[in-house]
Image 1: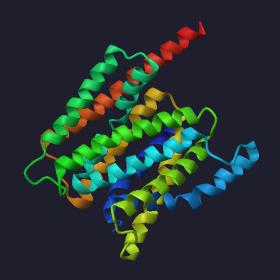
Image 2: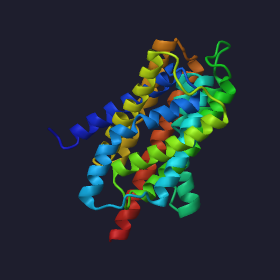
Image 3: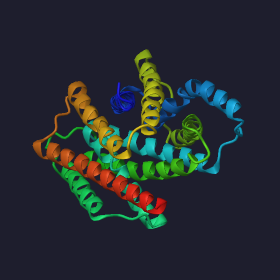
Image 4: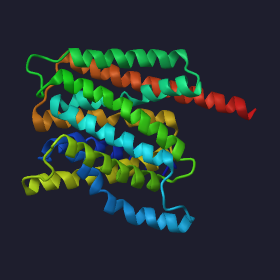
Length: 299
């Protein structure tokens, strides 16, 4: 078996598992922020044994680095915005628009850290943004969701929150392992979402066993899906991983159609393909440019 085969399988499996998250959010029977709270709170008992064992083995400090605290705060914002977006627009729109994050991360890297951005990245960014706009504008008269325009906006804003989370994690990973990142971002994120759901007066407890099962399912999706992706990302080229991860919005759109009968208009489908192709192209270009810069420094 090729050394990359198992990581590639893990990456595809993780992306497919994460695709169930927006479906489960709709089934939790609680408020959007409360659904995010249960996703993280129920994940903590699963993550804690791995984190404490790793911390003891490595002699790591028991308190989180400031970057991890910030990551948890931004992750709480990410889940709150996205979960509200899922309730107001279609699963496909909510998932594809939230996956504009790589473009946002590279733009922020250019503005704050002067990381170079090439013409191919700019083309990919333009294609991704045009595709996102086409998805938002191409919905039919029977569009899914209680308020599709607001849901699309919230889902697009999710990319900003996740970009901030990603940048904090990138800084924290220089001193913290994957399990530590997941544990502390989940703990801080759960506290942040608890505050949000109290301030907004959301329902906290599911009304039935199926609602509790959906909350537990979200936690399992969080641990297994995110864990598989995090493990695979360290063992695959960035260009390959960036394209494969885009399986997630495609699977989510398919599940939304099968479970909630959320059919996409042809124009929305074209916009989705354009948005995902733009993100893939932009990520590939950013990874290639970074690799060239690293090689130039090494010479």
